[in-house]
Structure formats: structure tokens, C-alpha cells
Image 1 (cartoon, helix red, strand yellow):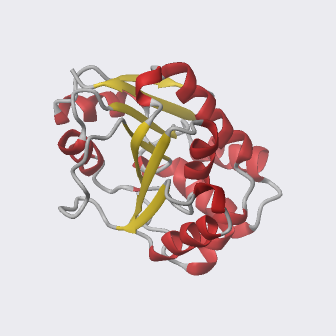
Image 2: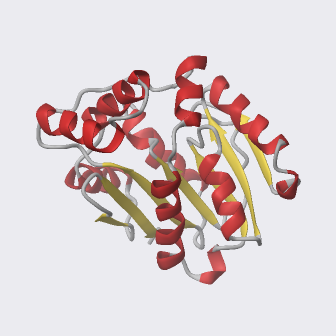
Length: 222
């Protein structure tokens, strides 16, 4: 199946609320577990950068799992950033450990800090030009920055994509099922991601399948 791009931003308030209300606990907890398996202890503390943070659910899960980290979440959707800010206000235990900014990459206004980890979840497939993510990672990552990018894998056919939507999100609202289908069709195959990394000159990163519909890019830039 050829890739079909989808809108880069979830900037509709109803769309953002539906995403925020969905139960991603299993998938997001798995991301935390995989990060703990792959990342050395030295990069589980310090400043994290989350590109395409959405409504902040994964940010809060990482803060709970790794008490020595601080996370800056970035998203181009104002609706998503507003939900993330609201979520932070209801979690006083994370005061001073999380902040969120609205920014659309590529951008020159992202802080150039010493990031222990640069991460991204379910963001790559939204981008019409995936190189903007990898060029941003290349610009902001230091020699000791751990890269942890997770995303969907594109199915072989639209029929398979529809089957996955019904199997995994059959009880979700129609708007979420629509977005999930569109995201599957917009996702990349592992070989395509490997080619993107080569084009960006990002050596040292490994592309690995996570499960039937996800992949992980991880490692240190060589």
C-alpha cells in the first residue's frame, strides 16, 4: 500500500479531546517499559525533549516512572498543548518537572539544551516531510543524547488497516477510528525509516519492530 498523508496537526478541539479521552494506557505503558529496557541509566535523568507530545499523557507516564527527569513537551497543535497544560494543573506532584510549548517544527525557537533524551511518540507519521523530525533531532541532540522514537508501521493494504482499526479501536468514537485509520495509512515501513536516517546522516540509530503495528528508533548518534 502506498503512503497517504494525513493532516499534520490535530488542531480541532473535538479531535484533540477524543484523542485525550482514549485509553492509551497499554500502549503508552509499553513505551515506558521499552525505554527502560533500551536506555542506560545515565539518560533516564536530566532534561528530556518530547517532540509531538500531544496532550501530554506519555510525558506524565515518563515523569512517574523516572523521578529524576524533567520533560519539555513540544507540539504544534494549540488544542493539544492546552490539554497538556490542563493535565499538568491537575498533577501537582509534577510541578517544576514538566513544561509545554506550542511550536511547529522545523523551528528555531526550540531551546538548545543538553538533552539526556530526545523522544517522540506517534508523531513521525503525521509529517508530510519526515526529514523535518530527523533534522531537528540531528540539530538538538548532543553526543550523549539518547534517541527514542516510536511510531506506527504501515499495513500492507487498506483492508488490513480497516481490520486493525476494528480489532484495536472498534469501541472508540468514530472520530478516533477515522484518525487511527488515516494514521495507519500515513505511517512508514521500517525500511523507509532506515532510508530517512541515512538521508539525515544519523548513524548509530537502530530501527526495530515493536509489535504488529509499531516500530522503535533508538540509540545514540554516532
